[in-house]
Length: 538
Image (cartoon, rainbow, N blue to C red; front, side, top):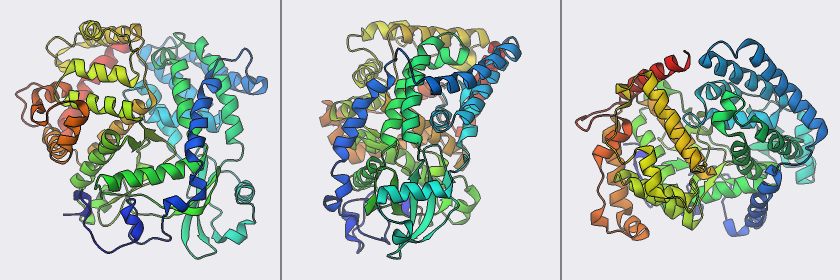
């Protein structure tokens, strides 16, 4: 059994900071949270970032003129191209053409729009599939900033020459993304590290771009297919909430420590978090421990090393669900580039710019939502969703349930033809929008992570029996946290019981189904998608 299978820490000699967080066993330095000067201002900085969002997304009477001209020119070219060449070719081709042209415009417009595309690329099931597919192309390395600019940012933020801090610094980045890029380096004190350096102009550019987006978004509502589905003003607000904290690396380093602490508090040993440097953390520079391992999509390498892929997947499910449910914090941007599988089976989890944080009231609502789902308690789920901010507080929950048809026996979607599927989707969308439904940041991040884990199962273990895994997860949470969960949601532990018929209904299969592999589920999805696509393209 690999280390990824274990969820309770075994007491062994090791670095003393393992008592605080889920770090590596071979530290380049020790984490002493109370002595980290850069961390002391984190709560204030996070509060300031959150309070800035309403101003950033408030529709201005006039946005920054020069940036508006640049953005509207490139988006205008994209929309005109769609209008002239794609619009009349059928809905499917039309949406694909528009998505392709919008993605190309994002590449030209730079970091803000590339980042927005990267967030959308992880939102399968949240955003239109054509847009998601195109935005996946923005995950690849973007053009890195020059080494001269990297040097300037480092020296400005650390207030000393680069050579005083690093005896080696690789000019070619390991990765270049929209907000920052990462370089390997060696400190003057000898430790091998990675250095995350923010792009020099990105902070000012993001502020201007958010004003432009806030000004443009209302004009796009209902005017083009993708925008009509994505609700542009809400998408801009969601993006602003996500990116504002990501622009301060002191908050990212604090997120690293908090997620590491939560894993240890939960006895979760399946993850390893890199240690941020005790001193070399600023708003635009983050020096951290270097971790490595097998790429998450290197299935052959992982299996050849004798690592249990099922254990990795269970670690993924338990780790981020447990953090959200019990500790109110979870990594918010799981994807293959942020994960390495180490030889001992543990998963090195990187990049904490996007992290889900739930205050106590929303954590309890989130906990009630998941527990109600396992018991097939529809009203309980909607009450929790209301408390999470998905629905207005004065929403008539019984009316919502009735309008959505959730008080009726579930229907297997594979038994519906294209007309019926389309009509059902339109009905559900219309009903939700009529009740003022919106998608809070934390729920969006949770859904994105679920989409990633869904894809991870497809890559690592398509033969996995999903029904058996649901039962395994339920048993784990009942055994490990049952009494605590019951106390927190105001129920008796013995009254909680997993409703497998409800779980099967959630997958859209008959209650008599005894086994459902991911391969089976994928075939069902393809059938539904083909029927729906055929109708949309007609």
